[in-house]
Image (cartoon, rainbow, N blue to C red; front, side):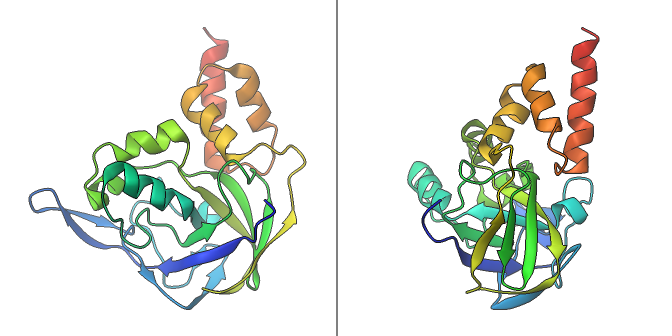
Length: 219
C-alpha cells in the first residue's frame, strides 16, 4: 500500500427508476452522479440514498467503495465501457484493492473518518445496470466486490480529498480474505470464527455468519 490512495470519483444519488431488459423497471439507488463535494453523515452522504434497506445502507454500510483498477479488468474481459460509478459506489478509489485493506481499518477521507466493516455483497441490480449477465458471478469468483464502511467522524468529502490510513486493524484480515471466507469457505468453521473475532465487523454480516456457524455445529 505504498502508492498514494486517492479518490477517482465521488458519486451520490437518490433512488430512481432504472429501465432494463425489454422495458422492465426497478427502483434503485445504483445510478449515482458525480459531484465535487458532499457532506458525509453517520448514515451516509447527504443527497444519497438506497432503495432496499435489507441489503444496503445503515450505519455499518454508510459508504460504498470500489477500486478503480477493476474497471479496466472488467472492461477488457467483457469488451465494454462501464459507466461512472457502475457498481453504485460512493467512492471509486485508486490503490485500495481488496487484498490491501482490512476489515476494521480506519481511514481519513477529507474531513471524515471511516472504518471498513464488511465486503460488499454484489446484487442482481449490477447485472440490470450493466447488462452483463456474467459480471456478478465473476465479482464473487475473484472477490473484487468492493467494500462498505461506517462513519466514525462526519465531515465534508471532496472529489480531490486525500485518503490517509489512520489505523490498520491488528488482525490484518483483508477484504479479499473476508470475501473468500464468506463466499467460498462456507463450511470452514475456523475461518468463520476468525472473521467473527473481529469486533468491528458489520452487525448483519456477524449475524449471518453466526447462523452459518450454528448450522455447521448441528451437522
